[in-house]
Image (cartoon, rainbow, N blue to C red):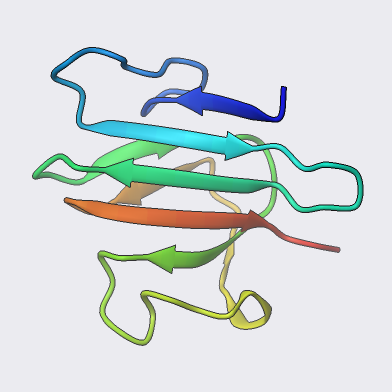
Length: 98
């Protein structure tokens, strides 16, 4: 599959009418980069499990500028197994290239 859906836990998307979160893993085609998108529409911070990869954070709409949107080349490395997405925010992680 090129796309997998998750909730705050890997492999467990919440498709209920009351869900406030979704994570989407865009798997790379050959020669491409893996992308992980987190959407938290809840009014509180949620902690999302991440696939076991080295990630760079390029977008976090909860952060103040200029940290909310960072060029991939200058994006901070995120090696923790979880990401705390702030209330009503979107996060985009790209797989760190060696």
